[in-house]
Image (tube, rainbow over all chains, first blue to last red; front, side, top):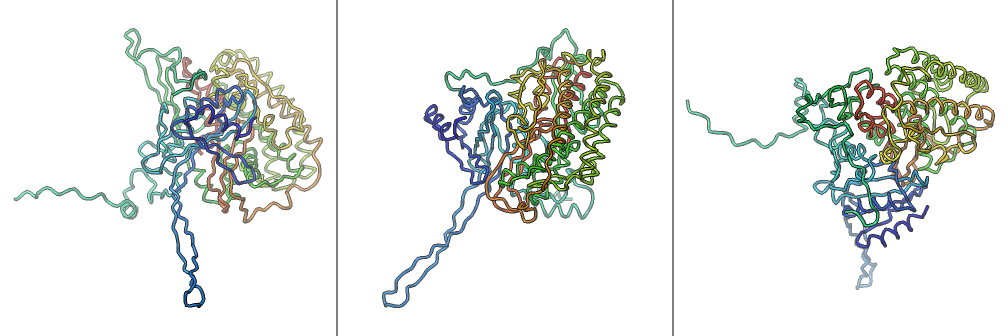
Length: 221
Length: 392
């Protein structure tokens, strides 16, 4: 099989408008991956499936990864020489840098026809709150059907073009996405709160009440 | 948007041949039946919502999640070794292969070598597990066909012998927790190997008897041949793996393709079906058991002496370097993979199980369309699912 660099080169030649980045894997396995854009993701996936040299006809694994915003603090030391001739002053400045968070969908592609692989492709959402749309690859590989539903369920990525995007494992009325890193367990796992004073109190503390609606005037009696 | 020249045929969700318009005046209304989650034929807490036209299935939607405990989240909050016993509970009939798949992924992540003896022991355990799984599956399949437990109990008699061996080695019959990163937990004694070897040598006799009883059975042939057909292109696109894929004619076995462990040292063949129907899926299991016996006999013959754990393997305080790895194995049900991302800490940052049972159900609807309810039970039985792995 071609190296990932060669595949990337061919993709860039074939889709000049698309952006394809290499994501290096620093680990021992060194399975590097290609980061695709949401806009051209499905086109490129189709190309990877149908290209005669690659024929990645089998999408083995599709999964999500949550990358919350990361705050890193860097300390920058600046040395200012003292004009009076004394020891130079050292000032420390702390710079906070925030790497914006995103949700990621990872696909492991293999070729059953040519028996090679894996080629790992990734797609990233713009953020973790409101722009969580990615193109669904289910029209390309049907094996993504349940797996993308699971990602939607557990991570909250919305796959555009998925034929039947519903929750897979959690129940339909469930609100949150449990595999996110900042997910907080409910204090009461029951869907219907049990009539148990303590549990209800804890649930109330956990979910603050919605602001009260303005009360209608009390009828005079 | 589709590029020129690629002439794609995205596999659509076209309705099967028997789907009729709902408001067809010449036929009665469609009936929606919910089968499960507490139904003996669904092999666990699995539910199918089937829409019926008379007795014919025109739509079928599987419903999951009754056994969901978010295994992945639990594993992300415990150490690498801490989730090893939890992998037993994925596919609770095949804990040895689940253990191996997880150990393989972690070893790939950490670059951990495995000594030769452990590689052989792993193959012995995996193939014994495959025999257990396939024998039970065939028994359960016949239960679904209505033979009321007779073949299943014959299979369970053989399974009992094998899981007694597992118990004497690992301390547990089903939840073995046997593999470790860089080897196995307990070294099998020569007596254990002799007992296992004797059992394996006797196994083909059981299989002959079993086949004599079942394979040519007229009811069996009538109920399985041509039922639940799956074409190869569909199966590949749907990510179907394992015996179900091979029954459709796909020659793809991770043992051969990835040649993980010491499988390249073994001489065995991968059976491939032609029709992709329920009967072929049944035959795949029978033939794979025979191949497993061949592998086991070679393993008992060639197993070297030596250490069973890599002396440099670190169990406590295990922190692989930051990075990611996807390790996959051929479990009895299909391709079982583990995708791990490490951030250098003691817990995996991301831990993902690629469950063959769940993904093999992707095309359940396609296989069932046009068949009767009774056939859908048999088709589901021939896919071979375990709900512990489907729902995780």
